[in-house]
Length: 137
Image (cartoon, rainbow, N blue to C red; front, side, top):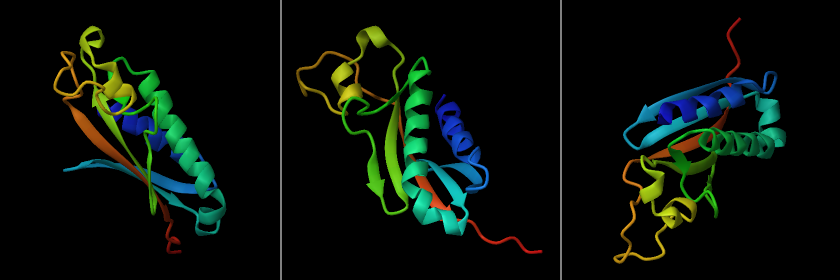
């Protein structure tokens, strides 16, 4: 389930032909890393645009998913990092039993007293922009 959301973000970055040479997604011990290799001359001027595109793609992919949510989607779900941003995804198997505050705000309003289901299956997603290397001719 998480891989479908990640692939959607990777593909949205790769569709920026002429700016993004390629984009790859790798799953590791701490979650997923999506790396877009950007044409060196476009990296600085297009950085904010590409990060906004990736953030919107992450929102769109989770909005269209039946059970994967962007943690903190109603607050500030993205954490800026030197090469891009990070976010967390969570699986919500039963919407009727979910603690919606923990999904929308990223934390529970009633810790210790809440009887609802909190995110149990979570993964991190980091999006990074790196300069593409020149290809050997």
